[in-house]
Length: 263
Image 1 (cartoon, rainbow, N blue to C red):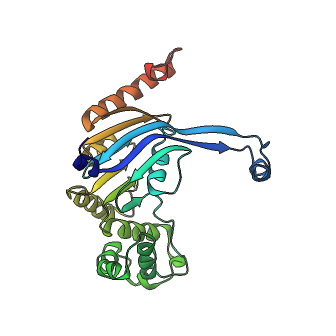
Image 2: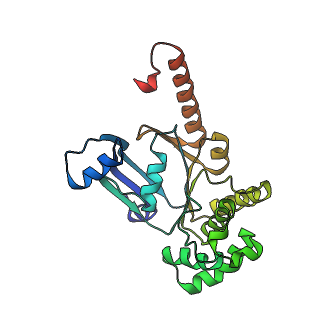
Image 3: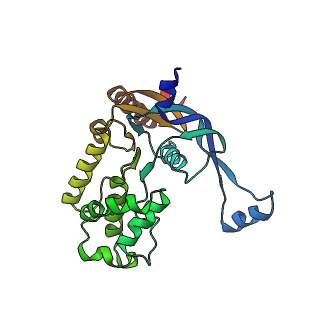
């Protein structure tokens, strides 16, 4: 691969595995801190996964619950770390995952804009330039200067969304976060995502159960199952594969045998 093509890779997973220890109760979890004899079940969330995403690509991760999609996003954002393998991320990541997390409840909404920006490595001057459009987008009126502890969960989500989509991300990650607020605000969120996705150098990674929404935003689809990548192609081909997988699963449940995807 040429040096230019290598420089275009913004996300790369090399043989990545992520396992979790599932304990029966808090007592067993506490016991594990002091002893290796604590009983637990091992859950493989991501299983020897390898893929590359290049700058400017728009990619949807498709898969049923438990496929490992959210775990992949958490590892890309640094919330979780792989048990083995190597992950490379090149670029400023903005993640619309848990929109209401990461705020200081005693800070005002405006102060939390700076707090979030600083956590992302931005300088105060950069944040100050973006502050007006973040405040306008969130549309919280006078509440922007009230402590976040006085906010409803919906108001926190609006502020979280406004910050993350307006910080000029190089990599934008969305996990089913487009249903924020009332219909008018949802429309504004969707339009903003489209605006970001259409920028040449922004890489977009999207997790959703809606193939229709995935098709409207993404050109490439990756189908996941039980932590493994089953299919990686154009969005239309990935949707066809995913729908066929769901049909096989449904047929397998009705009959005695299993679908071909479970064999």
